[in-house]
Length: 334
Ligand SMILES: [Cu+2]
Image (spheres, rainbow, N blue to C red):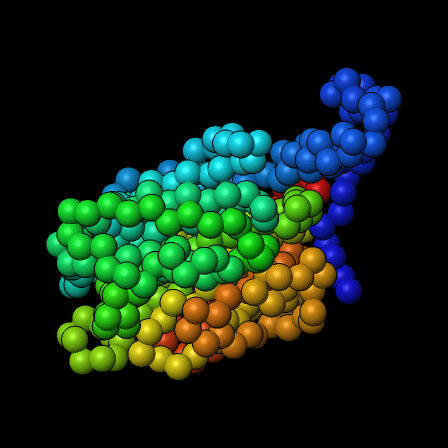
């Protein structure tokens, strides 16, 4: 299977790097630390092209969501790692385009909510505060006890704590589970939860793309669609990536009212890690179908510079806002 991501000579784990970390000669019990350090050195080789400086700050949210991972506040309790996250439900007015302002319900005032990230085996603690006016909750996909399943309403002004072990590794999601769930999700109460495998995946330019729909006129059908909250955003502000460098996309379909959606990448093929639950890809393709709440890891790199679209192959959905561009830039030798 082709992989255009090639480790350069600086990335090869060598004696100099062992010495730099003062780890030469340590016992086998430090192998985990070694791997972690090795991976961090390699991850630092990943270059992110500069973001367009002409984007107004009020329009920066989808560009921020793209590569923003919230690892929480790390605490050590009884010998294990706890990642604590504080999430607040609030109402926000989101400008979808020059004609449409949308009364959104949000986690931490952003849409989608923050991408929460942990490593398998960590303890996750979510301190959830509801200031949204309506009852809300946070229901996580994953394996956890019923008490932390997030289906009970948290009334306005109240707080609750969800706590569970991070398992299994993969790309998951969270969303409000108060009826009608379709409405609570399509108003904006959703986000991604990434649980990393025990040994990190190879270095890559990692990014999150969450697809969603907007039912503007309450007719139980979507009039607008978006990647990461704002329709047509990545058409106006293409995602800059470097030629030949590995891109790892965490994609999630949160579109309500439509049964399924596809994701298609132009002029390329991607390797598929279903639900992010494998370490090796199962197949390679250029279009994938996802039901609501379905998600995957997709990996690729671009052979040629230039501008390339990504979008659902249901053109009605793409033409109503769920559309974007990668801008592949030369100049990074990886
Ligand atoms: Cu809700």
